[in-house]
Image (cartoon, rainbow, N blue to C red; front, side, top):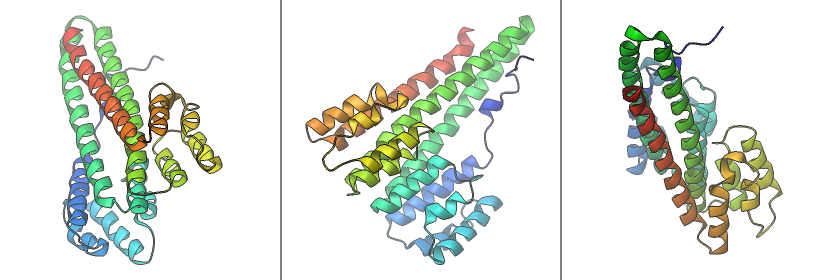
Length: 263
């Protein structure tokens, strides 16, 4: 049976996304202000009013207090903390830039929520109009918008890889560890290939050829990294690559938002 998109499952919003944004942004502000990690957990316990996040925060406080890394503790609650979230927290821990990592996460989550809400609203209006004359058109609108959202998320993941890699390097994380840490943001099997390449990376060996073996990184990221390595400005080129993919993701979402009106 042909799958129908009229229920908009691709655009359903997690009701805890808003509280997670709030939790993350407040966490970033506290860390940036120099508040100790354990004190942060105390101050954040009732910060969102969300019972699930409050329970997770209490668990994090206990496990971190017992010596566990916060990213490892978060990994035990995947229903609240996605893999990309944990990857940024781990990078922040390794590089000593946890406030920067959390601030980026909060901004990313806010953009994700705003984009999904806008597309969902536009799609609802278009489907209501299309159903009057053509039910198939209503389903097609949903399909196109959902596909656009998936593409935007894919592109945003590449931008996050570049930003995460740059964050580690500018924080002084060794190249092999920085590359392996950034790999966690990528989907498999690309993440595995980058981790394997990082493990085998020799002293002063170029990393662009490793990235060229990953489909998502081959076209833009690998050539820009090669330029950065050649001219000793790798962090700058990674930042530019992240900006390029951020703009591409925004363009995809902007085009998708116009689809219903043009259908």
